[in-house]
Length: 312
Image 1: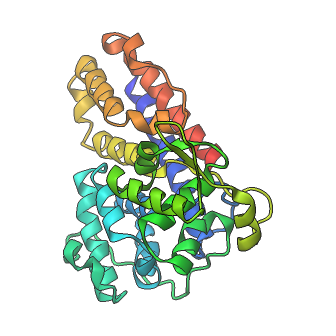
Image 2: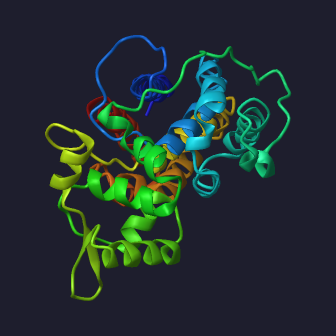
């Protein structure tokens, strides 16, 4: 894979990711450029983490992040974003401390205090406030709308996930991976929800769960089906990790094609679930020995960019 082709693929993926971020922020009421509507559910914690990951390349994201720290931080789960942040690069986790600082100091949400780190350094830009309340009537904002009405907790997120997966039966491990809580916490939540007849459950082992969306579409005034659930935390974590790896002054490329391909394989292995969970078919690294994997890796980046463009 020529260096030029690699950088082109990375650039296309970054642009596709930024376009997805603008559309998702717009679905929450942010003043972004008018564009296509959002067809999938917005994952608010994943949206914040990916936005933090790209603030170095797109400084305007700090405007959105500061706005959300002031107007929407209370609708985020501090525990969930902390859990999900473990998948992201160290640079993202450091910037999360800056967001927590804004959420605590300007958003007056003291839950963020344990994660807080003072904003400092030339890479941190405290954006201007957009000065408006979130708009959560957009169907894509379902998770946040449910949190406004029912609270910020694991049961609400499980409900949002099940509504976004339609009538598919899913087990506790799949739900836990989606919502970012431990299987034990999810197990307690679905047991309670099944007992309350809010969700349906199988009698076979392992137990699986689903929700009948019809009563909820009527209750929430949603026409048609709910937007689809995508595993945004995982695919965004892959993009963030790739961006940091590709941005290390071309160290991987300079090391030679064999080491370059080896590091690409390691990257793919770390984020394997991003592709399997989202049913994104990509070239299997095991089918391409040595540096033969470099061109399929470029193809993988193009496939992820196309998937982003088609699934936001």
